[in-house]
Length: 470
Image (cartoon, rainbow, N blue to C red):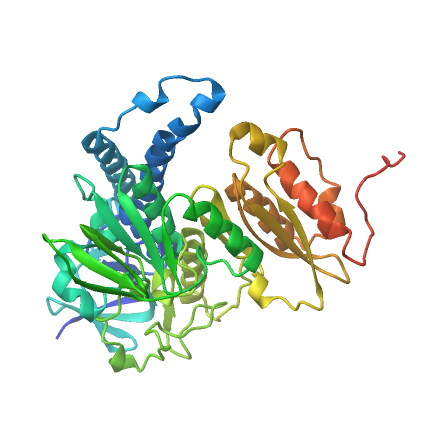
């Protein structure tokens, strides 16, 4: 059988695959990009972008609830055209997808992009479904992931929604159980509630949004739990209900709903790849084990990137992983790269953010913690969004910033400020020397940092109490 030979083969044209291409093509090495399934990236089709579109619609409609407090009359008369709203979200989704495709695979020379599924015959040899074989010096696996649906739930699959189906809906169910209170479940669960669905959120864990700080978890549950019920600590079971509804049970709680939204995790898209042929090492979840600083799989001429790694399923991380994998795939020697400061954002209202080292990884004897409750924060009060808490962490001896967890308005912005500061290895004192305008939400972070500064041993350089002389 005739084989096509290339220097690099990339499997998957999602974000990670495209970022890998951005490093491979300028090298002058020969490359093919192989993709089975839909084009346009998970982010644009069913992830980051369409989810933010429906979150914005839901938040704007929900905002009518505070109008009367501001002296704005008529808020109760606002109505929602669901078909129009969902159509708007889908139009934006289609635009984002088209932008990706038109600026990537559509622009590739003939033969560089190969549609279809492929599998490994050997570590350097791939075979397409149609029989074409491709021998590559290096292979990058960036095939993404897909939602998990337990086998026990398969009989009810026609009434179970995942992100793969959510953005195709022409109407929303009157009632829904959201299983999994992680990022996706929280974001879309709250949006569904604000758009008029009867929602219950269920998670077998006792925390939500990926948080690990008990104080922040408590605050987040209190705030979100006032909008819709949260059943935490028990796994969910699905059974047949009455009149075509599903009966969902978690512990001692039970409800009948029209639909279930499953957001209990994702599995790698590797079933078709024939990983047995290359003896790829897998972890207990089925993800390919690899070096996170080189993205290489053992000593194989194979690299992984993006959601298929199971590490940090975020676009900016997929971008970094793709660049690392692509650079190493075209280099004579393998280089290890320092990864960026972890930053995770849940775009619920208020935002939930985790940055740097999570609370669960800290040594309590060596860590100082600063805190500010959002209730008295002036700008938050004015916005009628003064709920939540900010907790910041630093090395007690040196004052070096370590991380933070928070639930508060505009936490998506505060998280970035802290991530940049942590990556530059700044101390609490150095952060407090920065300008803080008034009145802004950043003043809440400033207050938390002052509380933290009082608890660290290192006081130099300290905050500006008196301006230095020239």
